[in-house]
Length: 179
Image 1 (cartoon, rainbow, N blue to C red):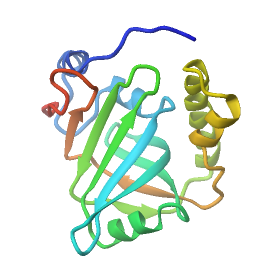
Image 2: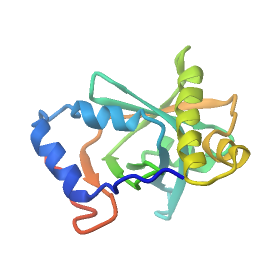
Image 3: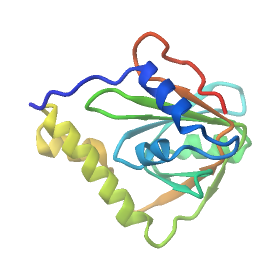
């Protein structure tokens, strides 16, 4: 089993500050993190105000602004309905090996079709997540089942983040990374 240093919220805050992001772009290190094979948990609110969660398969970032999370239509039907109904969204990206976590929030998002190369990118990112899980002691089959649903019904959740937070466990978790 591989041993690595743990990430900290302070690491995220320093990296964010040092990147000096513009008000409407994500720093390159965050873009790379979002697309490196992380677990993706999504949150929204139903029409009645109750929360609902979803799960992403992969993420793609365009122009360092627009975030596209690939989700399975079948396993995220309720979440997709909430977004289609106008719910704000939260997306939390967590790396298995050190628990580094970044959360993005947006007042609105759109559900759309996937691009021609999204399926291969989803497979690539899922393989990276599975490899991390195997290094942590998961059986290969279990890691692959967790990392990728094998969905043929992927859709895109697209949004421009309004707010960015470090959710990495430790003192300072939950701190907003100012834009």
